[in-house]
Amino acid sequence: MILWITFQWFIDIVNEYDTPIMNLEELIGILAGIFTTLAVLPQIHKAITTKKIEDVSVSMFVILCIGVGLWTVYGILKMDWPIIITNGISLILNGIMLKIVWFQDSDKSQ
Image (cartoon, rainbow, N blue to C red; front, top):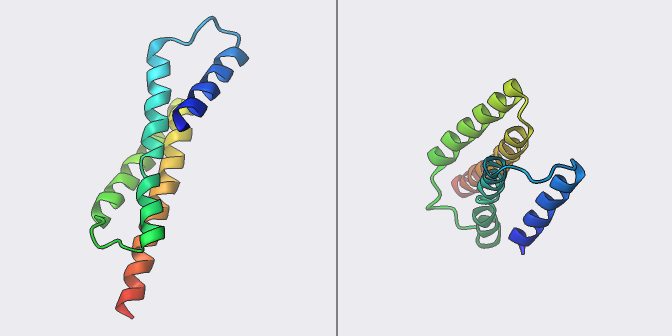
């Protein structure tokens, strides 16, 4: 379902700019950004519903947040909107996951 919505959204963008077809590199880049952005959603959902975060690597999410934060800055410097949007959203989502882990850890220590 998400793939179909993503595909429809992409077709709408292509049609809006009235270009014959977006080149393959741009298509792959946009789809890679979308799927990379969505990748953390199952982990967030599982952490919220099961409240089990013992096996979640905090350092991995910290490093990932630094990486997508830097990608966002890079996108801003290059004025590359797909990079800005996808990595900005990734930063927010991965930050949410970190917040979940930190709050659950602080609740356990009390």
